Image 1 (spheres, helix red, strand yellow):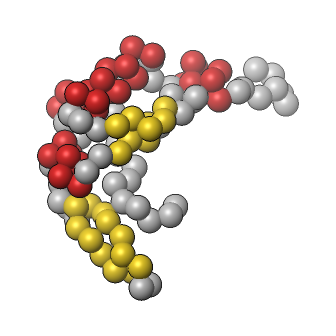
Image 2 (tube, one colour):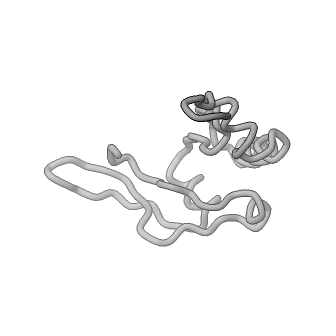
Length: 102
């Protein structure tokens, strides 16, 4: 691109996101462990997924606890997240495992 020419999210994903093959590996890995893939960003940089607290604990070797914050109940990981070995070369980080609004 040139000055004042912007990439669309899809173009950004093609240039800077993970490959479509790696994205498929991640999605399949999550789904085979019972997690639901809710959304894959067009930029291929983020995956939103959901599951039970127990599934998350097993998949990411963490503990999920309930917390009260400002009078509201929330869930969040209480221990550090471990990226599974099968995804270590593809996944750089898990951004959040909580229900706090970002």
